Image (cartoon, rainbow, N blue to C red; front, side):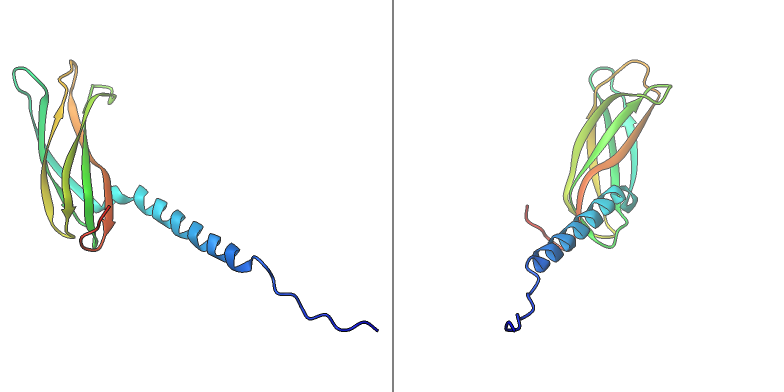
Length: 133
């Protein structure tokens, strides 16, 4: 009779579990970033000078329970068919605390046929307090 062989421990179980957890966290973060626009309200007005770009000024309201960091907006000029014919990106603030707001100014090139404008928060990181890059 041969001696009893002790049961082997599963090698690689912990790394597989770690990878699964990391993937789950990344998927949750991606799903949250897709809904990030829901955390903000944007109000704006447009000035069209006699020459030069359109000036879009407004306010971004952070309606989330988390602070928003590195916030940018994209202002789009749309024609009658709703097609984007020009756009401008503006930095809003390094941080907008939860429940607070910040003002912005964006420049959008003047183009013929523009009927309306659309402004959205195009980039922001959500988190607690001050964050470093």
